[in-house]
Length: 118
Length: 265
Image 1: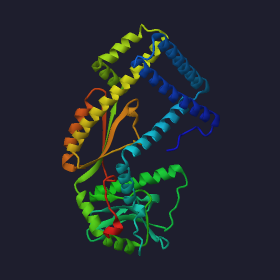
Image 2: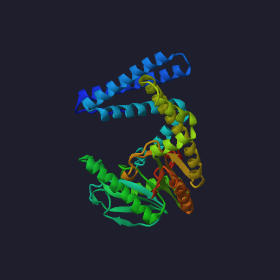
Image 3: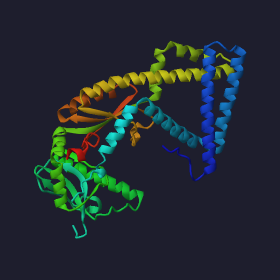
């Protein structure tokens, strides 16, 4: 599945891709922060500092998106990445279903039926 | 039909022994007719042997709609059909098609009999994320507690706890959806001969804008069971925050199993 980037505006597309990737990394950092809080490995001061840094980063990303009008591009890149990841995970988790689907797809393609033997 | 029409564009195979013209309803207004072998028939139009590419995306779209229109009309006429995908061209004349039907007769007849008195239906179940979030939130006191506490926290801590709240809510909604999905899946399977979960939905009507897809099925349903299935779906449709789109009957595109024709023939 190709990632859809606005081809008419490469700059916008590349910036959208970068912001989407930074957003994903930020979300991973946020999850890590939550885990650490739940494990009680951060004190109140550290939580506050980390939270502020993440909030600032989030705000900066939102500003970049608004200023450059790339909200839709970022959304589109993230949807594309989600689909790629879903597809890969599904194939890894269900190899037999994947094989069956490929087989069924090939079998039911009427254009491939060798009916023209006359 | 002209002298250069050395091929037949295939729409479907029908459960009929009747030689019949369906009129000039084919792609490019070509005349569509049946080529019969015993009690089955191929529904075709005569065509040149080289495929003609569409001149534009609009024309391709129009042709696909036209292809499906012929299948709908043929289904009205012959009840049970084995539809072909768009763009299936067979090189040869009517006699060649007849020989091909003869060669695969047992296979096609068996499949036509299996699909007799049934049709394909499409079911899409949508949910309103906001309504579901509210419902879920009521059932999880931990999330409500985080929501309350956030109001008195300093900025940094509140930000992280907001994310924790959002992730927890997302997970809870996802669990709730999975549980409802299983329940609905059971309900639908009770009234269908076969079901296929559709991974992607290409078209969502405006009516469902703002809602998200919970699950989508293609179902092969016996005619006698359609009403009961409709009633089951109506009970889902009445639940707050949910909406069901039930469409059909369609030709059984997703349920025709022609197996390996070369081996069977």
